[in-house]
Image 1 (tube, rainbow, N blue to C red):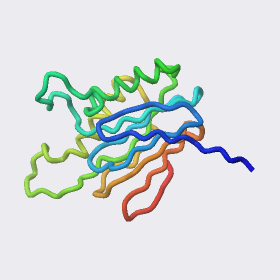
Image 2: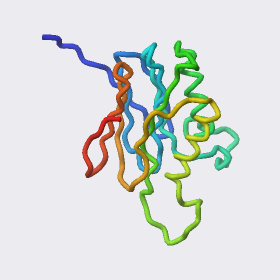
Image 3: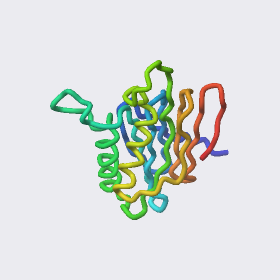
Length: 166
C-alpha cells in the first residue's frame, strides 16, 4: 500500500501560484472572485490566479498587487508558467467563480463585480489566444476549487450544491 501524500499548494485571495505534478493547487472563498486555472497538459504544469477585480485602473495606488486584477494577473501567471517550462502554444484554461453574492437595488454595472470579473478574464484570455475549455461561473454561492495537473480536472465545491468536476 502506498503511503504518499500529495502536496496541495493553497492560493489566497488576490494571489497566484503555480504547481508541477504531482502537486495540486487550490483556492477557497471564491464569491465574486474568479479562480482562473492555466495549464500545460504536456508538461503537467498549472497555475491558479484568484482574481478579485476586473481592471487595475480601479486601483488608487501607484504600486498594485498584480494578482488582484484580471488585466494584470493573467499576464503575470502566464510569465510564471513559461518560466517553469510551460509552452505558450500548449496553455489552456478553466475557470470558476464570478458569482453575484449580493443583490443591489441599483442597476449600475459597477456593482456587478462577479460578471465583470468573468468578462475581464475571458477578454484577456482571448488576447493571448488561450482556449477556455470549461467554466463554472455565476450564481450566488461561494466556491472552492482544486486542480490536478495530471488529470487536468478541476474539482469545484459549491456551497449547498455539492461537488462537480469540469
